[in-house]
Each structure stands twice: as structure tokens, then as C-alpha cells.
Length: 317
Ligand SMILES: [Mn+2]
Image 1 (cartoon, rainbow, N blue to C red):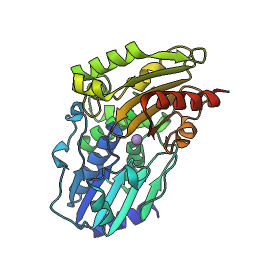
Image 2 (cartoon, rainbow, N blue to C red):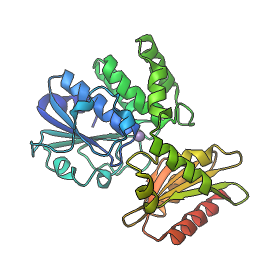
Image 3 (cartoon, helix red, strand yellow):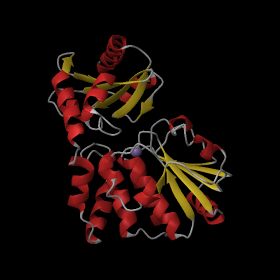
């Protein structure tokens, strides 16, 4: 299960399907498109199966290879990116993963269940895109300008704009290499991190107004309900970044953001210094990274709020 084995599998395959976790973020989209463009440069028939990605990412090269359905049923190779467990692949696409002759996954999540035939998992990498940078370099595959823009987007978004403590020397080295290549880093930073739709702004405004502090200001909590989605017209990705707001406030160790889904609430957690929010989320069957994690709470609002705050409080000590 080395990178060389993966290259062998890629060379053998003709039709390749790529997918990432549902509700795709910048790393999921950027990594998928980078992989797709690389495979197409190798004369492979590759597509990305993905839906509900934020429109602010439509500047990414290769966006035309993102499809929501596939004519091919049995792919030679399926590649899952940025996805810690098979369960997080969009249900509509899971059959294409299951039916593929060979399955590969490349990921950086803390609790990955090694669900593929070949698993490349690096917990300390800040982004799947960054694993792809070193993998492509190791395999001697050319990172074109288009591919680099996708990879850079993944690294920028998953490090929260180079601000999270997961950022590494390699993140900056790649950014610097992109600058040397003439890529407009400032414009990509702006489009991937700062640009927001009007609706996203309204959602943030509402979440800020509702933000409450607990445990002497060490916990920040806010939420959005389904009725807010309907009222404001909130779409996929437009809740991204809300959880970061609480984390930026002085004295806050853990920021919690929950939003209503069909069967309960999805919780997003961020910590600043010492709380392992991946552990907190695993109590509810979720997971993620030490300082950024999530879980689904199959409860009503009051129960969900109480349960998640109680679990975080336990971990503050
Ligand atoms: Mn990621």
C-alpha cells in the first residue's frame, strides 16, 4: 500500500471516478479537481461525482468535470478524497465506489477507518490537498498551474487561511512555489476565504446575534435552525465559517456551532489550545481533527445544546 502501488493502479485503469465527503468544502473540491485534472493529463477518463458545493468555488479549473450522475456503472478505479469513512460519501454516489474494481482513498482525518483497498492516510497533514502535493511530487507527476490552483485552494481553506495551528512548513513552501509559478495567490485567497454570498453574510449575522458564552467565556455557542434556512435561503456551504467566529473571541477555548438537519443537529466544534474536540465529538459518534471536529446529534434543540455544552465542559478541565 504505497504510493507506487497507487500509480500502478492508476496506470491500469481507464475509467476513474473521484468522490469526496458530502457537503464538500474547499479541500474536498480542490483535492478532487486536482486529482481529476492530473488523471486527465494522464489520458484517463476521469470525472468527479459531487453535488451541493458552494458557488464561490466555481473559479476552480476543471469545474466542468464535476458531475451529479454517471453513465458508467462499474469503474475500473474509484478514489475517495478527504473522506474518513465510507459513510461520509454522498449516499447517491456510494454505489459507484462500491462497484469499482479497485478502491483507493487519500485522507488526513484523525479517525479514518481504512475502508479502501489502498489507504493513504496522513493525520498530521493539514489538508488532503497537501498530501496530494507531496504524492504528485514523489511520483514525478507534473503539477500544472491549473492543478496547483485547486491544491492551493484546499490548503488555504483547510488551514483557515494559513491561520490554524495545523499549518506546516510544506503549506508555505507550496504557496511560495505557486507564487513563483505566477499564480495569483491573493486572488485565490480572497475567493476561497473572504468572498461570501449575501445569504452567507445574513446567516453569519444571525449566528453572531445568537452567540452565547458559557463557563466563564471559555465556550462560545451559536446555532441555526431549519426555519432560518428557509427564511434566508441558506444553501450548501453558506454555514461554513460560522464556527470560526466564536473561536476568534478572546478567552474562548471551544467554539460550538450547531445547525438543524432532517433528523437532529449537526455540530461543528473548534478549539484554540488544549481541548481535543475530536474526542468530544466521538462521544456522539462523530470525529475529525484535534482542533476541528463534528458530530450529528439526533436530539431536539434543547437536548442537543445541553448535551454538547456538557461534554465540552467536561473536557475543559
Ligand atoms: Mn480536509
